Amino acid sequence: MKVKYLILGAGPAGLTIGNLLKRSAEDSFLVLEKESVPGGLCRSVEVDGSPFDIGGGHFLDVRRPEVNRFLFSFMPETEWNRFERDSRIAVHGTVIGHPIEANIWQLPIEEQVRYLKSVASAGCNTGTAMPDSFIDWIYWKLGERIAEDYMIPYNRKLFSSELDQLGTYWLEKLPSVSFDETLRSCLEKKAYGTQPGHAQFYYPKTFGYGELWRRMGASLGENLHCNCTVRGIDFEKKEVITDNGTITAEKIFVTVPWTSLSVLKGIPEVLTDGIGELKYSSVETRYFEENLDTSAHWIYYPDPDLPFHRILVRSNFCTGSKGYWTETNAERTELFRGEDRDRFHYLNEYAYPLNTKTKPRMISRLLSWTEQRGVIGVGRWGEWEHYNSDVTVAKAMSAVAKIMK
Ligand SMILES: Cc1cc2nc3c(=O)[nH]c(=O)nc-3n(C[C@H](O)[C@H](O)[C@H](O)COP(=O)(O)OP(=O)(O)OC[C@H]3O[C@@H](n4cnc5c(N)ncnc54)[C@H](O)[C@@H]3O)c2cc1C
Image (cartoon, rainbow, N blue to C red; front, side, top):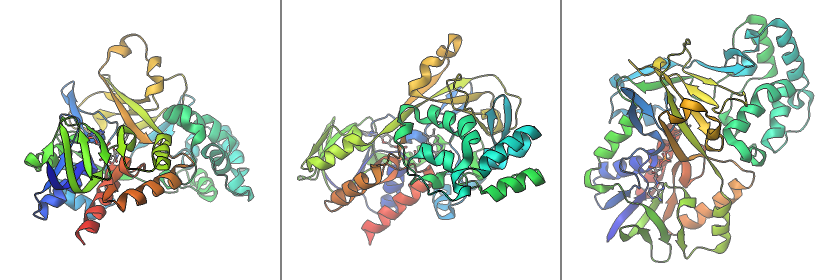
């Protein structure tokens, strides 16, 4: 079989590429997806009569109008509710606003003094050079108290054993609050500083987040092949090896994890070794039917005795629903006990591409080599970046614009 364009994976990246090709009247393409439905990490199922987003808490950021215009062409804006973010942190039994450094003012006054003294003596406020490991950066940026009460235990739960290997080149994902803003927030008793994402967001009125991507998959018709696992790529023949046979293409878009491709022919050993070094973490989501007495959309839990690191209060963003779901690193799911073990749960093997110190050099070498051969890595796994879905769609739009030039 031969097509002009082959797209591996039908998550937001693959669905965007496929739909843009279709809209440009291109019909010689296929999107190959291993699951029975499209959407990737953004899929939803129904649990206890309401949507459950199996990939974790999924909200559409308002910040990229060109992306949202494209997405609203599949699911109009009138079908979405718009929210102001209400996210919180449970520190030593007290629940305060997120980010912690902008909400210390919500703690008792003695605690505020201790936290402020600790932030004041952090390396970034005393003129020490910024370190290049994430753990050292936490102490350098936020001081010992915030590091040890929240940031390190929380991130240890989120990234588990890989935390020690993370670098600092991706920190625009974290809130940016200066020491002046922390001080000002304590004096004025209100949060200062900026949230990096989801300060305002959309969530569907009557569906889960997955409905958007289901519709995008439906619009591809026969160009989308589900239940088709890709095993590998032969770079010399420009051929993709699947469970159902091989397909050749002029251009191949890789949106599946490079590490999920067991056959890579005609690629230098140094690059396959580099792919072997790419790290990722797995996240399990689990449903609890109890209604919580909070108006938060989600809450972060650094407490190492609790298995999960975040809860998503479904009843506060999903109309007519009840309960909440948890996100737990797969290495910690054994900590669920008793009846919690039997609750509905879903394991996402590929959840977070990890920002290890050596990744940027390795991935840029890989992507420039493959691109010269017409194989383009796009999206969270194709580029091995922590992209949210709106950023993924923006990247996929740029990739299509580039080949159409
Ligand atoms: C816990 C969590 C919370 C998140 N919260 C948000 C949020 O609030 N807002 C937001 O915008 N984004 C959020 N994201 C990010 C969002 O999930 C990603 O940006 C988005 O899913 C990336 O799309 P993608 O197509 O690149 O990858 P994916 O969604 O992972 O899609 C990849 C696709 O490839 C398929 N595939 C994999 N291997 C193969 C193979 N060998 N053969 C064939 N098919 C294969 C998979 O089944 C999948 O369908 C969150 C992610 C996580 C893990």
